[in-house]
Length: 364
Ligand code: NCD
Ligand code: ZN
Image 1 (spheres, rainbow, N blue to C red):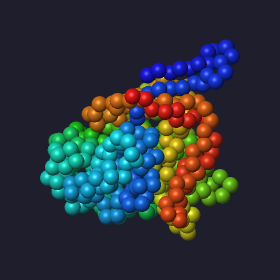
Image 2: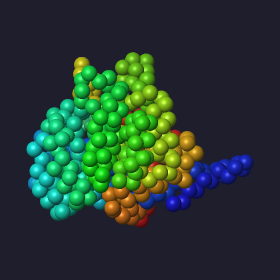
Image 3: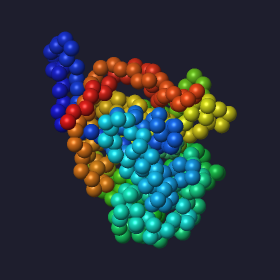
C-alpha cells in the first residue's frame, strides 16, 4: 500500500497535491445485481469499483441449483461492460428442500463459493428461505465438512419482535446456537448493524466474519426520518441508533481481519421505493468506495483501509488478493443521482451529493 499523504504536518499543501491512497483492487463480498435490464444497468457500477463480487441469489425465482447458478453467472458475464474482467462469485439460496449433495457438487465444481441463508420472510425475495433451521442441519453439516461458508441474513422473523431488535434476537436465539452446533462451520454474518453483533463476530473469528455496508457507517435510524420519511434509506437490517453506527466504524477501522466490505447494494426501481409500501434495499454500489474511504479518513485509519477493502475477505474465502490497483483521491466529486432503466430509474445512495473522496483510477 502507498499512502501519499502529501499534506505534511504544518506545511502548506503544494498546489494541486491531494491526498491519495492506492490499494489492490477491492472485492464486494455481498452485492445484488438482479437480472435482465436491471442487471445490465447496475453491473457497470459495481464492475468499476470491484474486481470480484459475491452475487446474492435472491432472484425471482431464486438460484437454488448448480444449473441456475451457472446460467445466472453466464448472464452476468454477458452483461459486463467492454474490457471489464469483473468476476462474479456465485452463491446458492438455501431452502427447506436444499439437497446436501447438490451443495457439495456446486462447491466441488467451483460454481458457487458459498450458500446464503435467508430466514423465510426476513427480507426482499426471501419467501423461499428457510423456515426450519433444525431441518437444515444435514446441509450445514455437509458445508462444515467441505469448508463451504454460509452467509447469514441475521434477523429474527418473529413478527412480535421489534424491527430494531430483530438482529440482536437472531444472534442470541439462532446464530449462537448454530455456531455451537456446528463448531467448524465458516459463517459470514451479513451486513452487521449492531455493536453486539460485531462483538460476537470478534469472539468467534477467524471462522466467523462479517460484512459491513457503506450506508450503515454513515446513517443511523434517525436519518431515515430526517425531515420526513426517507424511503431510499430503508433497508434490512434497518439502520440502528447512533451508538451502533459508531461501533461499526470502530470495528472496520480496528485492523481486525474478521471485517470485510459487503455493500449490500440492493437496487429497486424508484417507483418501488417511493411507494405506499416501500421495498427494502439501498443502492450503494455506485458510491461504495468513496464512502468507505471517507469513513477510514474521518477515523484517522487510512493505513488500515487496504486490509478491510482488499485483503480480509479474500483471506477468509481462501482466495488471493486481486492484481491491479485502485487509487482514491481526496478530491470532491459527485456521483450520478440516479441510474436510468427505460422510462424509470434507480436512486443512488449519496448520488448527486458532493462527496469528499473520488475514484482516481485503476492501475496494472
Ligand atoms: C436486499 C434486497 O433488496 O435484495 N434488501 C435489503 O434491504 N438489504 C435483501 C437483503 O440483503 O436483505
Ligand atoms: Zn443483501
